[in-house]
Length: 301
Image (cartoon, rainbow, N blue to C red; front, side, top):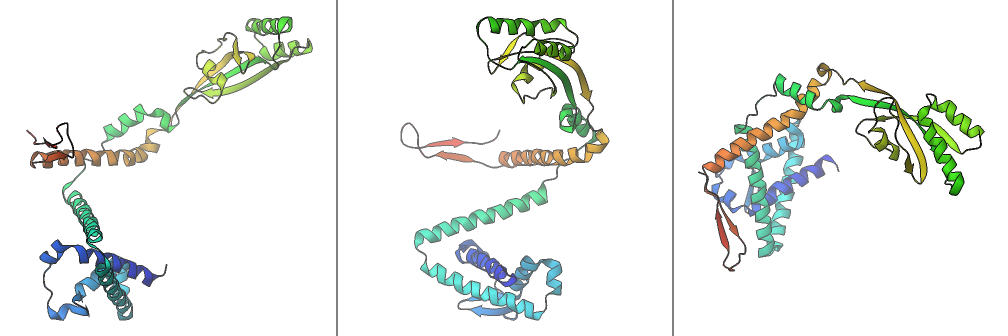
């Protein structure tokens, strides 16, 4: 989409709004003749309209750099938009015009709401204590974690009868050994399908079935016999290490950025409460048990 196509889209948008907003027509201030830069049927485009469209399209800095040729292109786009908007309005039925009017009213209220918030809502700054409290309550978000190193001995095949009993007994005996790797090697040499493995798991996470078992163990503690996917396994935690979080000084800016929207929401909530206290609000239900509709007063004490 080139620059002047964008100008046309913006102009059509503004023109469409002006067509259906009766309130805007009633409140409009009649422009002096010398301010008019174009007439389009019964409508006029003023110098102020053109200036506003230029700023909206290229920004204030760009407006200073835009020459007369560029302003003329913007004006031509506005004229074309007026023509299209007038033709479209003439082709619309009553329902379509009402829908358009509702859309314009909604957009107008959005602009007024944004203006009110900008003019009246001042959020309290995020304090050092707030940053510190958030940091202490969410250390894991900043790298703090407890890592457990563990080892397991497990069977590699599903057996039945005496062979299964022999494997389970051999695995259970591992609890008496201090060197599980050597013990598993000995069992393999005896012809048992046994495997020794080590790994790490972060406290609070569950990436595999064995992790749930590991979380219940303290360093040097051995689990009972468990069956994972039908295979016997015992586990032992070798060590547990706490990893420190990033220092507060390194993450305070990030925390402030996270808390700022919360402060703004608090300010909006407080201002909203005060506005509602001063305003009579009545919610009208579309239906009720008696079929007559219901009204719910929301008057504040």
